[in-house]
Amino acid sequence: MSGSGRVRVAFVGKGGAGKSTIAGTFARLLGRAGRSVLAIDSDPLPGLPYSLGVAVDDRPIPDDAVTEGPPGGPRWVLAPHLDPEALIRRHGRVCPDGVRYLQFGNLRGHVAALQKAQHAWSQTVSELDRHRWDVVGDLPGGTRQPMFGWAKYAEVVCVVVEPTAKSLHTARRLLTLSKSRWAPQTVAVVASKVRGPDDAELIGSRLGAEVLAAVPHSDPVLAGDRRGAAPLDADPEGDFAKAVGVLVERVLSLYPAAAKERS
Amino acid sequence: MKIAVVGKGGAGKTTASAVLARTLARRGEPVVALDCDTNPNLGLSLGVGDTETERLATLREQIGDGAGEHAPTWEDILDRYGTDGPDGVRLSVITRIENPEPG
Image (cartoon, rainbow over all chains, first blue to last red; front, side):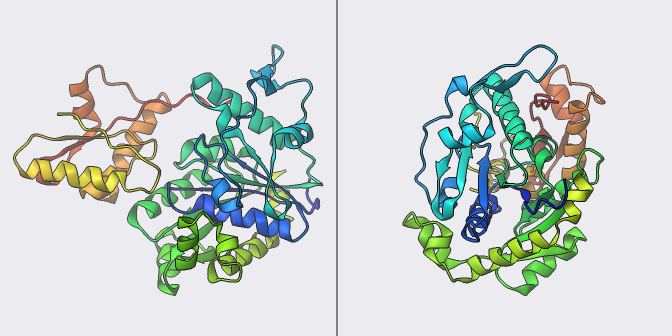
């Protein structure tokens, strides 16, 4: 599957590290470059709309979009009238820069619904046209479930880490998990909320890993958040947007090697 | 008294819980601090250190993997999956077992 020129990226890390903020901006910068981008998240209370720049909307993907699968296959499948393209067309939100956004988290709620969301997510990303869509996933906080469950589709997994003890601790767990044979993806460290070069160096040295990109703490982005503006709209030419732009370039530079490793 | 601290990731749940637990303990209360997070970090904020926090997390994961045994009573949980922290706070990692991921 290498050479498709498309990317499949997942953002993981401790809660509050900046996954949604970076993921939404990342998706929009890809969209702005003229690419077809699907942004997905799995959180019933998602942060992604804020950074994509669309209103938070609780309209769920309807219950009947997912039905019980035939025996022998996955327990839940997309309904017969839906394939991934139709799911995006009917239930995907249209965001600035042409990004399409599917909120799988609102298929969650209790245990059965969580499985429904997971199966719908897996089927959608595995059947989606790889030659057309970039996929950017904003994954739940935590370690094992995001890494071994939701991130399976991704060729590049970005571990978002801010320079705090707990965020570093979580990142270390994620990096350990990424070495297991169930996690063959290319894993990259993204420093978040850094306040200077020392912070990115600290993160790199504490994790014993190369930092792919360092995204700064940004007062204009924070001020934008308070008045309901997405980072890219609050400060389009600012340091935050520039740093995520660098991240986009570096993730793109990991391909097609990342896709080859994955296949 | 039983207190639960909830909120969005990164909001400060763990930090507030740790300070609350140690403050109560300093007043002479017997305090049990339960870390119910799937990504347990409370040990870091209580001050038991990286290594001990990771040891407790690993113990929990072994139960999740079927390699460790569930404790039959809450006293066993505190005993087997816990550690003594500063100010006499007893910390235990007690996350529920996750559902298996879909194949």
